[in-house]
Length: 364
Image (cartoon, rainbow, N blue to C red):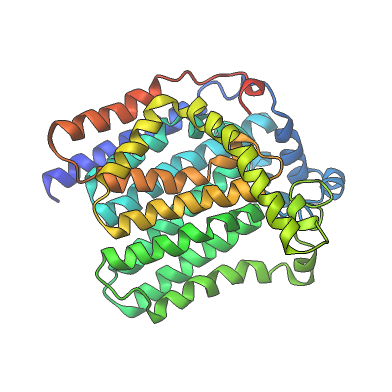
């Protein structure tokens, strides 16, 4: 194994370990967040599950997501948080693998550093929430898409696409809001094909949507009830308007305008000025159309969230940041010399400069 590859693996291991340590620190002392109780009890208590109706709320896998917490020698809340913290460390590893295959070691280190220390990720991956699992599944799906593009044999490409599709389908069952990542998935797939010097459309790519459909088939006739309570809860009011397409578009446009300042305050409240500078640097240093496709996919995902969510919360941003981190890492990976040192150092130092609060009610 080349020396540089050994160094990269060492750095990657340290970043994964650091990510896990950050997420596990004092998780037993955090004040309970209101959604944690509903999420955990929906998995562990039949009565709460019937009342909460995860299927009707568009998150059917919540009925099983936290059941492994029963088998850990910890309090139930701490055990559930432990599972999510491990999921966050897995996201760091998945991003490292995908970026290593797509753009090389530099991009992988930048992406892993960002996710390992990004306050938005660290904070939410210390709570018993569903959004961190969606982020992990999206990162792993991206890694499999890149592996498909680099595979030499057709059967390998098909297998990787099926695997990526399955992960995307599962993400949609964790929370149906994962479908907002579809524009990014499409553009990321095109970016991978372009980067790997393959035709933009190939037969093995058909396995991606087919694989994504398989987990949904397990719902059977319950598929018709998926998300049925979202409109009654006021989460998606644009979908409940009965007077035609025009009023729905008007409501979505209004929500985009109203929610954008809130989304910006959350993004920069967690990431600080450094996040804005990194996004600006990524735009400046983007070198090819494939990188722009990755950035465009992130922008479309955020725009979709602004339009669809009527009652947004900061945790909803977490899956969106997977595509953002990938865009930043791919754009800044090729930067060399002093600028690369400044940017990569700023990535870590800027993230660490924000204190990770232990009072969940101040941030969630």
